[in-house]
Amino acid sequence: MREGSLEAPTRHALDWNNPDFYNEDKLLGEMERIFDICHGCRRCVSLCDAFPTLFDLVDESETFEVDGVAKEDYWKVVDQCFMCDLCYQTKCPYVPPHEWNVDFPHLMLRAKAMQFKKGERKLSHRLISNTKIQGAVGSLPVVSSAINAANRVKIVRKVLEKTLDLDHRAHLPEFHSKTLRKREKGRTPTQAEVREAGSTRGKVALFATCYCNVNTPDIGQDLIRVFEHNGIPVRLTDKEACCGMPKLEQGDLKTVDKYRKINIPELVRLIDEGWDIVAAIPSCVLMFKQELPLMYPDDPDVQKVKQHMFDPFEYLAHRHKAGLLNTEFKQELGKVVWQVPCHQRVQNIGPKTRDVLALVPGTEVEMIERCSGHDGTYGVRAGTYEKSQKIARPVISRAKKMEADYLVSDCPMAATQIADGLELKNTETNPLTLLKKAYGL
Image 1 (cartoon, helix red, strand yellow):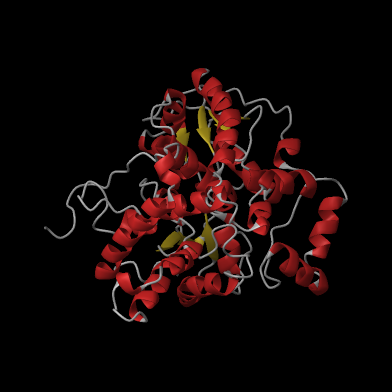
Image 2 (tube, rainbow, N blue to C red):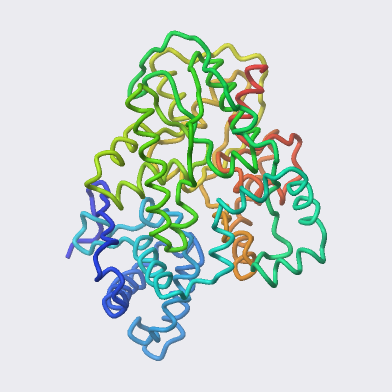
């Protein structure tokens, strides 16, 4: 048996409609098989708390092997996986096409899906992953201000900790009644010559995303300003639902399917009209580029969206390669520390954010390729907040030593998690905002 694999990693389709997918005995057997491989390797010990939890269970067992770990303790490992995908994409030598066929994140997803089907996932976790309800309530006039104010009151936070499992110390996002979609309602794309560059066709439809729409509408507007400054017409999708990533991470695959039925036809319609699709949240891009295509490998529409979905800086990098990026920058940025979000890193597009920001004269970009530990709900839940902070600590420590002018991350939640531990010279924490600033817009 050779060690590791020399081939590029491949991903098998997620057979989530097969009854065996939810068979507990077969699931536990597969968990034991893969846990035993992980125990013999241990390369992923530094990534998240799922692996230290597993290895501690093994080391504290009577046999010092996986066969000494009680099956009911397997779920302790599952609870610590937030599906960043880094173990699969950057560490594990036994992923397909290696014959051991290790896909740890999708094993954890299968375990969560089985728990969800049996009603064993916490109700509070279902609620805080429901972006539809949050957005509908949190964006109401007056209500948004009340929620934001309440989130800063200690006694209210204690109540939320008891009822919704939201740690009272966690930084919760603000809500905006004037959402991105309200701000850009009826917008007409700029009139510009549409020019292809690489795999980009030169005009984009913005998938607003739940988070950018309700919590950080400024980021969506910054994307629009930057793209239009580069002669790229931008419109919003006529309608959209959540991308499905928060529900996928809870194992709620039926709701993921419900969102797919809303999003995919709309995106395909736009693609057929000549529009590319862009979203400012890496997790949303990854959902359409990887997870949905693996759930629906035979759906041509899902596969079409995969081919035309782009990360913003990936898109701009294609334009630059073709000589179509506006490089007339007005302002230097100095030293920028860029934390690479996990869900952008595993898209295998390379450090495009760094490459584009580095085009700005008088700008030095330092990368930190390490997880912030946030992952949407993991960083705010009472049971995982402390572990999330522990994962973020090395990133914060490195950023402090770099003494940069800016700290940015394409993931606004990761940026907030890291920035909370720093004394920053400047408050801008999103690279799109920085690029807009460099253009003098």
